[in-house]
Length: 163
Image (cartoon, rainbow, N blue to C red; front, top):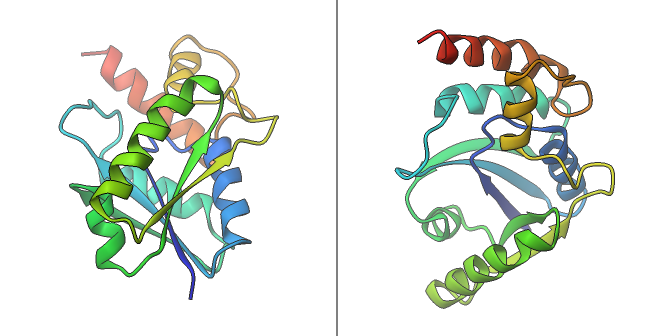
């Protein structure tokens, strides 16, 4: 059974993420969307909130699960018997970072491959950071995030700006 892990912060999940998950689900027997936690990042949504938004986004993808992990992704991948770390490339600027991470993961465990999947042309410009900025300033979110993400995103942003 070919298992792939798609790690990321997903803060929040975007339509670009959903596109990647859907495409990966056609290539692998099982795909786990791994909500990662880094002590170096300040998240808008908690890990359980991010997991819930992702779970709602992948309803109907029978071979996709959602999990969370704090630590080295490569350790999680090994612990669940997966063979592939799936990463997305939006633009050239992502390449250097992803190449460095793939090389480090290969050094830590040469049996696990990193697969870089290009974003679909209609989603290459979408990032969680950009989505939060659009939402913060009242821009249109249709097509940037799944519909069920809009209200929680606006609510979170309003709560953080009210502080």
